[in-house]
Length: 101
Image (cartoon, rainbow, N blue to C red; front, top):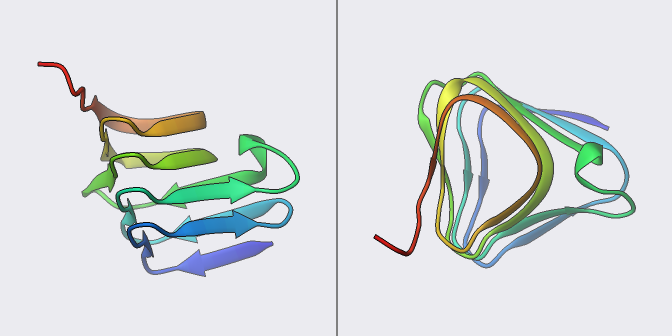
């Protein structure tokens, strides 16, 4: 289905499961906390589409797990250490935080 949100926040230790193809249109920020995940059954990343207009930094937490396509043409995204992303990300700037300095 198609869903429209002002913001989309997934709290720590939460798993979000989608049943079938889904498109999330988010006006403002998307935030995925530590140890959270987005999953789709059946199917893979191509069945979860996230779009946001935000210009803010979006944070995807430590030990988080995602299978989706993210389009954020005006945003920066920070992928924390130990997080896993399956799919595509299209944005203005990406930072991958390594546990090694």
